[in-house]
Image 1 (cartoon, rainbow, N blue to C red):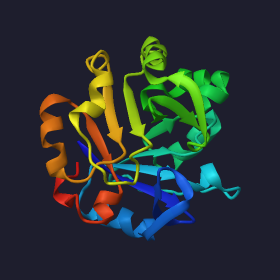
Image 2: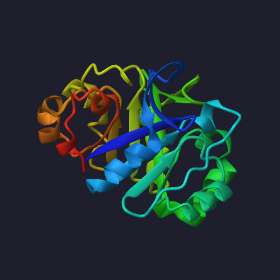
Image 3: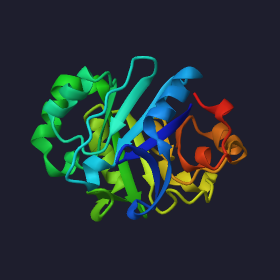
Length: 226
C-alpha cells in the first residue's frame, strides 16, 4: 500500500528537507488536497501536524469520513486523542511521547491500543525525538523488542537522512530489518522517488510506503496510491 502524506504547517501543505523547519517547500492548502483525495477515493491518508511540533499555535483540524485518516505530530496525551476522534480521525501516530512520558503512553495504550501506530524516526538507526532535533542513544533494533513485548505490530520507520531528498530506496536500506520483518508490519517513509524504485523492494518486502514530495513533483503517479 502506498499512502499519500500531508505535512501541514500554517494550514498549508509543505515538505521539509530532512526534518528542518527552516527548509520547507509549499505545495498548496491542505483542504484542496483533502477534497481531491476524497474525490478519487483514496483509502488512507497520512497527516502530520507540523504546527503541533514546531509552533506555539496548535492546529486541531477536522476531516470527513470518506477516507481513513491517520494523524501524527505532537500527539502527547489521551485527551488529545479523544479530541481527534471527535474530529473523525481513525488512527494516531505516537513518537516522542513514548520516551518523554511513559505513563501517559501506557494510559493511551490501555484505552486505544488498536488505534495506535508507532513512528520511529531514525538517524543512522538511532531514534530521534522532539521533531527530529534530539538524537537519542537508543538503537532501533533494541527498542523494537520493547514494542514487540507490548504487542505493537505496526511501525512507521523513517530514515531522516533521506526524508525529502528523492534519493530513492534500495534493498540494502532494509537489511537491518531481516530479523524483525516477520514479527511486525512496517511502513517506510523517507527517500521514495517513484514506483520503478519500488518494484524490486516490493518483491522482497511486504511494506507499506508513505510518499510526499515525490507526489508533489510528479515522479510518483497518483494511480499507484492506495
